Image (tube, rainbow, N blue to C red; front, side):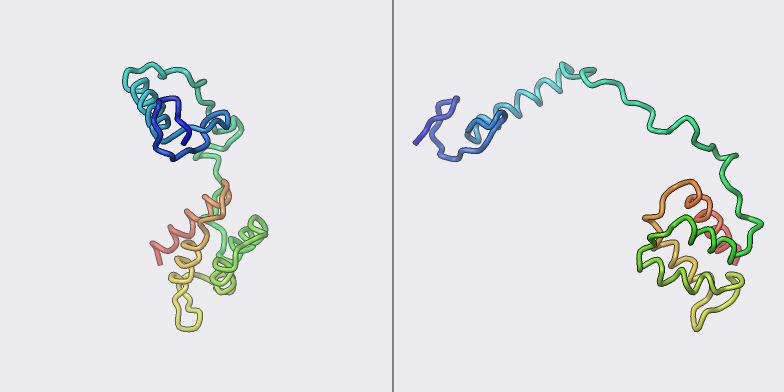
Length: 145
């Protein structure tokens, strides 16, 4: 049975750094050394500083599009334009939402408010400034409905 660098013969060999075989005890020793280095602060400041993830041209809260004066059908047209690959789970609620005049109307046995809330719960994959603004407007309209 091969021996590891630590001298043990436990027989459990794994690939370690550089594709060398090493046993479990060597991995534990390496992890223990890393943990000790972290605890004493030896590795603090070795990573480069993080860059600001937000681009410079990103609109602030005052520059976000305002949809408060738009009709529900106009908002739905904007959704359709800005989210072309809508998943089926969201599209199932988007189509009834697009047919409503307002959230006070009913679609079959469902209220407009419930359809909008179901759409919002299935629209979590839609990202971007337009998506945030429209989701906020739909939430506000649901609160008023």
